[in-house]
Length: 137
Image 1 (cartoon, rainbow, N blue to C red):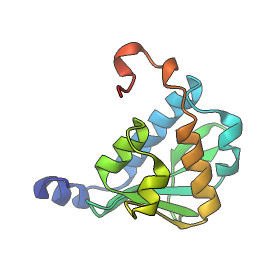
Image 2 (image 1 turned 90 degrees about the vertical axis):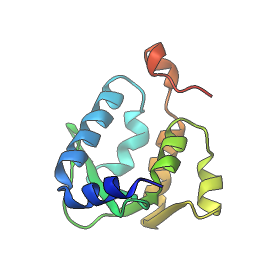
Image 3 (image 1 turned 120 degrees about the vertical axis):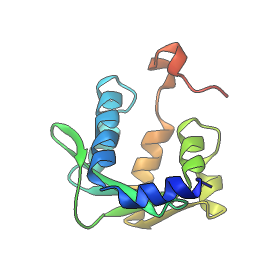
């Protein structure tokens, strides 16, 4: 659970800056080969929303011809979890299916699109990261 002051701050901030930051990070990962562009093609033109259940806030991104960018409007799929669960997923400390079946990870909307996003995360080649940035575990 996030500290109450951090939750209050997150709810007051506009969504666009953190969504843009996420898009930049995803584009760096895409260019560095961490993600397969082919595996992400089903996300093209669709809005994916990531929500932090413990903060009551989230960000939306979309994938276009030039990469990821922050998105507005209705999300095609929403993936919701606590911050610690998103971090555990990214670092492969938790299995997404376990989180899903224990209801710590919720996918709403186009669940097939949510599975594409989940599978892309599962396929990340962490070996391509510089050694200090690689997840441990």
